[in-house]
Amino acid sequence: MKVKATLVLAGLVLAGATAAQAAKPEMTGKEKKEMAAHVRANAKNVPAQPKTMAQSNAAKIASPSGAAGQRVASDLWSTLSAQTDANGRVSMVESEGDGTGPAPATEGQPNE
Image 1 (cartoon, one colour):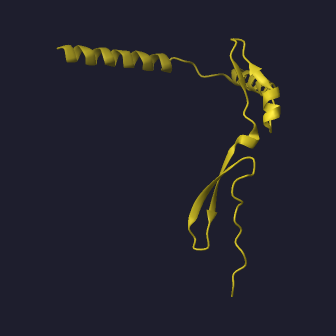
Image 2 (image 1 turned 180 degrees about the vertical axis):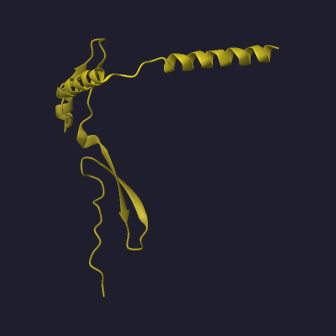
Image 3 (image 1 turned 90 degrees about the vertical axis):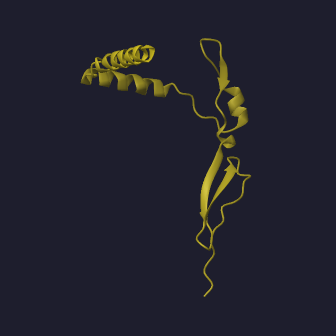
């Protein structure tokens, strides 16, 4: 009996959640245009991505709640690439964004 009651309750909760989601009306054309304009306006306020740690340290971000943060400098991003060797095998190479990783190998002219 207890199992049946639990299943019935779970079914009612699921039906209620589905009905609430389905009752949300679709956005009109005017609402979509307003949302797109709002997104474009917010995109203009995004600070530029710093390239070096000095630029990153100079541009720290503070939120209204008091939390602090900063954007990671792009020279710290790692890079993942795929290379094909002479036998046709593909291998992945990971390197740091500062250029200190292994240089991509270039295949020379074939010997005939």
